Image (cartoon, rainbow, N blue to C red; front, side, top):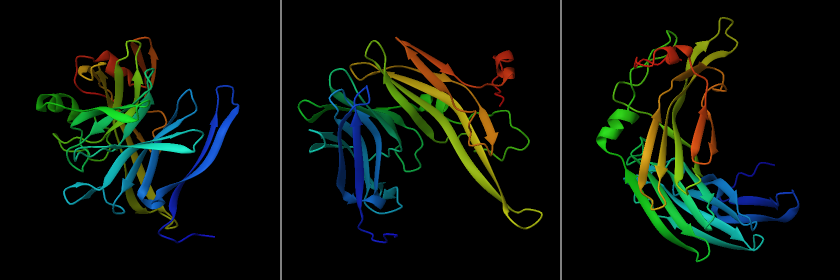
Length: 290
């Protein structure tokens, strides 16, 4: 039976196991928010079996921006004591728009929440942020927004002219950029926070009915392009950043051979991705091939 009630509350079913897959606890939790207005993400578990996640609650349905600011609030939720107790940590985003973020627990029992932000609701990248929460004392102990200079944005963020396949639809105009997705945040051996992002987009074109007029023809294009990696020191300062140029384009395949895989070994980060051989032969050429 379909529940057409607009006041249906968001529910969360938790099942926690140890490293040997022994059941520790389970519980169904009802949140005090409508499910259609609530997004839960970034689930994490510490060594004590406590659960951490991020919660995004919209004020009005289907709107990212309202009255000149974000139409949502973001908080970190902690469930402990086998789910019978919880703590909530609201994150003050200072009027900035946050499309995606990541969460991890460090060895000092601190929650680290980091990601990329935009000054406008178009979610064009303007900088990176970090929130740090002390689990033991149940309080926010640090928040920081690192904005990028215009020279950085012009050099790394904005779209460059690339080699185009004849079947590729018209790209964004020169000087326009598109969404950077945060892939993950990790801690290296030195305790620095590594933020890994990738520029990507996908869009579909309806070409109308097929020649038998029995179904519609839709083409979906996938682009997975440049990677930018940021390193924040233990003092929460931007230590370094690195851009890796790549251009991956595909059609109607969900981008399954695109994007990349990464592996951290000590302080060394290794990336693996499919690339066109011409890009290795013409490294001095600014043109990228897909």
